Image 1: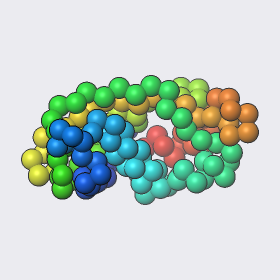
Image 2 (image 1 turned 45 degrees about the vertical axis):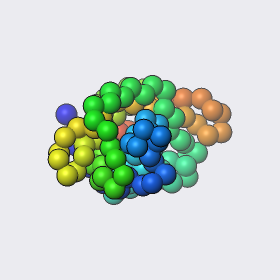
Image 3 (image 1 turned 90 degrees about the horizontal axis):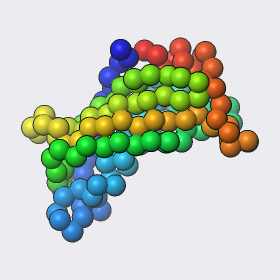
Image 4 (image 1 turned 180 degrees about the vertical axis):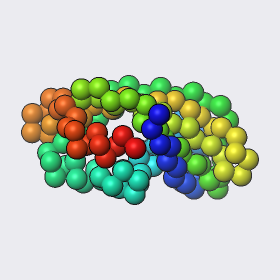
Amino acid sequence: MYSIFSSEIVVRPDDIDMNNHVHYTKYLDYLLAARYEQMERDYKMSMEEFIERDLTWVASTAHIEYKRALKLNDIAVVKTQLESFSGAKCRVNFWIEIKATGKPASSGYVDYTLVSIKSGRPARLTDDIIEKYAI
């Protein structure tokens, strides 16, 4: 198993939908923000470094299970963990918790594909990338 990293995100007014809780699409925004932060802080290889190599990550599958509503001013704790690497792909599991209660708001996974910016085609993960991310 790989390490679990966490980031905190404060729910903002523009995250709230007409039902007075966080809109379901925002959960992916929270995950994206957490991954960017964790790539630089925890894996020591930021998204900018991938772009400098003419590489980028695209989501090929996203699966979310919603458990509890996040509300205005809640602090969402976004935890992520790499599950696997294979060729040009990796799977990232995630859990979003409500900080005040420790209860889960959602969980799921996203499959990401590493893509060459120049060709638009999948690019195999190199050994040095795997080494940085397999912690």
